[in-house]
Length: 428
Ligand SMILES: Cc1ncc(COP(=O)(O)O)c(C=O)c1O
Image 1 (cartoon, rainbow, N blue to C red):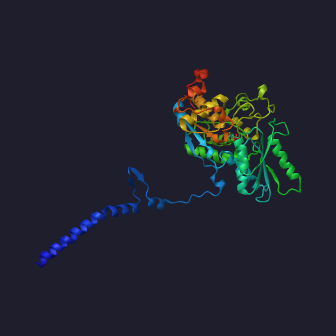
Image 2 (image 1 turned 90 degrees about the vertical axis):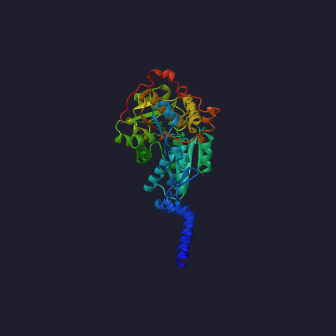
Image 3 (image 1 turned 180 degrees about the vertical axis):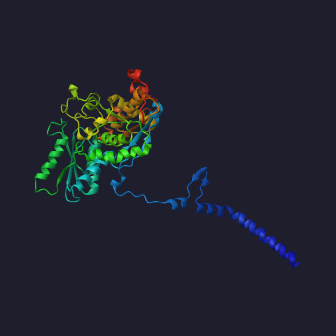
């Protein structure tokens, strides 16, 4: 009897334990899974387990706005890549905190001046610059972050968004009438004169620094030290062609000087807007066009809606990389406007005018010269938001229908059709 009771109580105990165990199995397994960092499923989606993050955690904190500059993403522009058969990649410089690649050089210019003892934080020092906008915005941002004031001289027809931004960043904005570089009141000359005025008056507190983005070699070096290496790393060194415009020339020179050491067969192509003399300088060695004679224009953007690129003199920053530029492509305003619209309609990409020029030139080079199968890197310089009142106003309404325009429509390839798709292999 006792034996029978013993056996049945053991059976009962085993049975209860079995039920208990199966009821808790799910819970225990889920706890174990979490503990082991196994991934779980929730409605078909894979969920990362917090414990996995806890094991691999690494601090990632950027210090100040300076810490946000650079390391920008490289994106594949899907529409252009599909249409050309080339991989068209763009360095997304508009993702810098000040909205353009100019953040890189603003930081470099200020840090170089600090290292040389020309600027001391919170001592009333003022940075002066002549700029058509982007560099001014980046300098105004860096100056605020580092304890300086910024005084920006710009042409009085600069788009209102840029002027508003400068004022909201607390920069002193001085608008001057558009003038040739040989005119003492041209915006770059005016900025230099303002810095000199400050430095020659001992009664004024704080020194003046003329940042001089066109001639200061800290500009191209910033791109040599950072933008070039980033492109090399992000492409794994697999880049055949780079295409970009030049304003000061710092980006094209710095990137080309860095990349061509590692990739001697890399082709460097300049994208040039109307009114700029650089196309002729690259193609024929001189700015020969009577309309483009050095210094004769009122300002370099006078014949185009495009801001930031195109110039009629050889700056030091362009000159240091000039011999590395293999080819040049002219881009009309009409092509740039159509490309800006195309990128929104096909890719949801809202870019500024110089980016539109870069993308037209990249697509033209892919179709007319390189042929399919090449990797082309260009630059998304800034957002269309900086160009709403001028460039984007001229773009007109964006169609409700998705992606109706074709690349051929934009580039008007009928006029260059004979050269299209001729494949000139570009070796890595
Ligand atoms: C919007 C924009 N894109 C491109 C450039 C060209 O860059 P870089 O001056 O390095 O030639 C500039 C220069 O001012 C710019 O403002």
